[in-house]
Image (cartoon, rainbow, N blue to C red):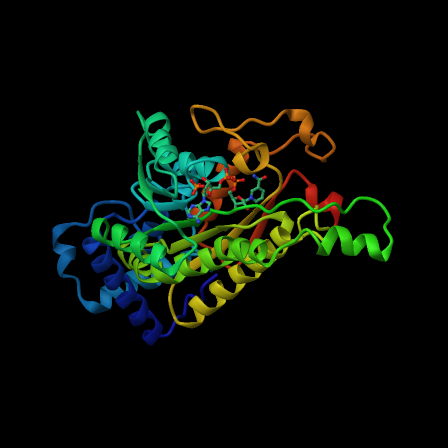
Length: 365
Ligand SMILES: NC(=O)c1ccc[n+]([C@@H]2O[C@H](COP(=O)([O-])OP(=O)(O)OC[C@H]3O[C@@H](n4cnc5c(N)ncnc54)[C@H](OP(=O)(O)O)[C@@H]3O)[C@@H](O)[C@H]2O)c1
């Protein structure tokens, strides 16, 4: 509990905070959520009589003192604040999902858009993006808007940034999801030293490694750093909200086995570490932008099934990952839950969250 005998100085600070927050709320395009409003809520819910508008600084101080003495040390919320719609609120937020034309990116896009976000999807293939907007963008609370773009070069990222900057005041949610996979390496069974060289060294190329790195690591770095000004703007425009980056990494960057693709797993390990570096350095710069990553296990996508249907969705039989603790691969709802959590939990920063049906506990890290 706050000490009821707070000093006059701290009380005046509280009064000033009260005033500042009210001012901020009035100027915001979006009103504060019920949860944030509870911080400045007057002690009484009854309407303030007109004569009280002229209350002296002293009586105002007394009012805050009474309020503080009743509050516990953490911010309290009422029951309505804790309803799903308030806790996982992405309504009217502006989002950008790279690789939103298929697989996991499409799952993230749908989860954000059906809950009221305006979602820009970026990819290199216009046809895929248009199909997603047409099939999944109708009769929903939010919007899906295609932008053709390539995240693997600086020029490509500059173009994507200019496009968004010309249309929006801020970017609230950036999902760095675009990624590519590598050819398989045969790692099965025991081998002689010569066989290891033959299987691991001979078939690989430096281009395979650098192409993967450009898309899976450089891409998220360029996108995040280019969009920092628009992400910070989102923090400033929305009370109780911080602009947020969500990197789609992988359990492949966490497991000790190569899973038959050294270059891909190494790129994902680098992306996991990049996530940590960006969250720390952006915070150290004094900015309020959260950076987290979701590390998926196995989900149906063009990468994992090599195809998608007319609706851009891919399918994977349940038995495909029957050996996992979950006894199935991941699905749209699993990813929706993860992306909405990362986007809305304002106290989550710098983390990598595996969503993998227990893959990591089975395979070890
Ligand atoms: N599916 C899984 O089991 C799994 C597990 C762990 C992690 N992941 C990660 O999840 C992310 C999404 O992969 P996915 O499995 O959903 O595969 P996917 O269906 O192939 O999706 C990847 C998307 O990224 C886009 N893309 C690729 N390179 C791009 C570039 N340079 N610029 C812009 N867009 C680009 C692709 O579209 P275009 O080719 O048209 O550009 C495609 O829509 C990847 O980062 C992947 O590593 C997937």
